Each structure stands twice: as structure tokens, then as C-alpha cells.
Image (cartoon, rainbow, N blue to C red; front, top):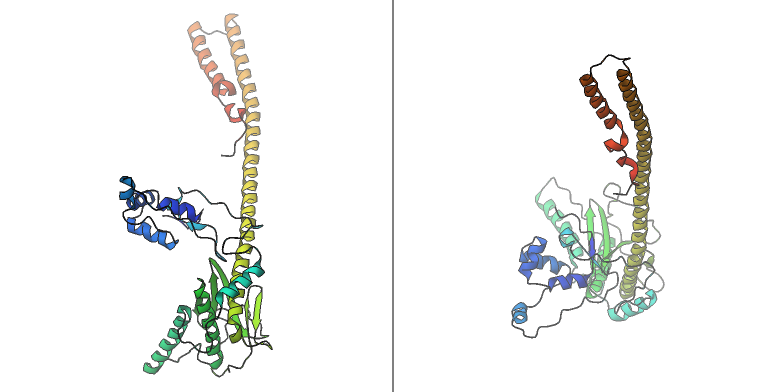
Length: 382
């Protein structure tokens, strides 16, 4: 098993790996086929050298320089996560939550980022109608179409379309415009349906930003498939809406409807993605610090127990030494008594007994038996 993708590396290191040897050789190093390795690299936006590169190298001919990783985009991590097949690549340090965060594509100041992205977005996709649905919206429309089609051919099936009311159709038009506009800037979006519960999110770089688009002033609540309200098929499109995402909020108000604010919303969502990325760094630092403290606590507990065992072994050495000395004193007294005639024991029997008794004393002696090794050295954190 290769485990979770939790080995943190830089894209530059992955590029260097991809350009370090022919793909077939590299594939053997990580236990993949060359096609499998190409797919794995492509998933992280990395490609190997062009065809014929290694032939030119072996022939001593000039070859193109190895590319560098592109500058970090808003919401994007400056590292990638791979599984342990790539554990030979150096671990990338976790960026500091204190910054700096700036790159060629991301200013340090978030308000500057908002201005930059608003200018880059220009004219947003219209929310007047859905001409081309975003893939996330298309899946929702397809779900309703399938449900209605089933009802037309199955008498017992009662259709439950989620986006059939004017209110829901307006929500989809707004979300579709946002998703398509963000897609132009290289960002993603998702929609998830569970029963009558629907969740929306945008993905800014690598950072997921949940969205809630609902009636202004109505508390969104924490819904799931079991407590989500059923859609009202008669709910009108004139209901005032508000869109919330992390710390940001936009609404139908005197400045205009949400449909007129798509470009501003998208620029704001990109800022929220970058803000959330920076906040996530702080959470990761806090998690790593908790793990470090917990590991240190476990280490100290192991050392405490090891020291207790060391002291117990020391005390046991003292007891064993006293016992061995008592045995040796007894052996000497018995030998003296035999020599004085106080005990009647043939010389060969005395010698045999003395050898046996000395051996038992040596077994008991903590030095000759080696028992003292249990406390001679301080415990280590192995």
C-alpha cells in the first residue's frame, strides 16, 4: 500500500525528478509504469523532457533548459502532496503563516489582489440565462431531467426536482455565471446533492471555499440530507438573495442585484480563497505544534518509565549483591568448618559443593551476571 498523499514536496523538485533520467528508469524507481508515471506527473502539472531529449544528451547536442515551476496563484499551495512512492524526494518546508505570501501572481496585500483580479476578470459571464452550463451546474440540471423523465414513464414515481422553481432557477443562473467567470481565471467549482440538500463551493487554486446562496436575512443553518427543507416549487424569483463565503457577503440591495455584481463577487471569492489559504497555514502550524507537544509528552512519559525501571534495576542490583556476598560468606565458613573438622565432609565432596555454590553466587552477583547493565547507561528515547 502506498498510503495517503501526505509527503510534501515542491513542484520544482518534482520537475527536477521528471527531468533527471528517462521516464522508464524513473518509473522503476517509484514502482510505476512509464505511462502511469506520466499520468501522475501530469496530475500535478508536470511534464518530462520532450521526445528525443535523452538522445540529444547522449549525442552531446544542445537541449532545452529544465523549466521552473510557475509562480503561485491565489489560493494555491507552494507545495504539492504525493504518496510515499515519491518519499525519496526532499520534504518541502511548511510555509510560515506570517508570510511573506507574495508571488509574481499574488500581491502581499489582499486588497491589491482584489483590484488586480477585478481588472483581470473584466466583463463577467452574464447571469441572465444559462447558455452554456458549468459542469457543476450541468450535473444538477441532468439530475432534475432524469427525475422528471422517470416520472413520465413510471406511474409510482413522484418527481422531486430541486431546481424547478423560479427561485431555484435564479440561484442556478447566478452560480453558473460565477463558476464560469472563475473558470476563466483557472479556478474550479463543485456542487454536491444529498437528498434535497445541496452544497456549493468554489476552488481557488488548491483552496475550497464553501458558498451559501439563499434568501437575505434567513439563517442558513447546518443542513444535511435529513433536515434540509424541501424546495418550494412556487417560490418566486423576486426573493432577495445574499451570497456568503467565509468572511465575505454580497446581496441584492440598493446598489444592484447579485446579477450585476458577478465580476466583483468573483474577485472577492478569489480574495477569500487566498485568505483561507493563509488561514489554513496557521491551522497547519497549530496542528504541527500540537503534534510536537503530544510527541514530546509521549517521549517524556517513556523516559519517566525508563528511569523508574532503571532505579528499580539499581535497587535490585543492591539486593542481589548482598545476597551474593552472603552466599560467599557462607561458602567460606563452610570450608573453614570442614578444614577444622567441625563438619565431616570428604575433600572431593567439599570441592564439588564449593564449585556449585560459587557458581550460584556468581549467578546471583549483579556484576558477574551482567544484571548491572540494566542501569549503567541512562535511558535513551528509542
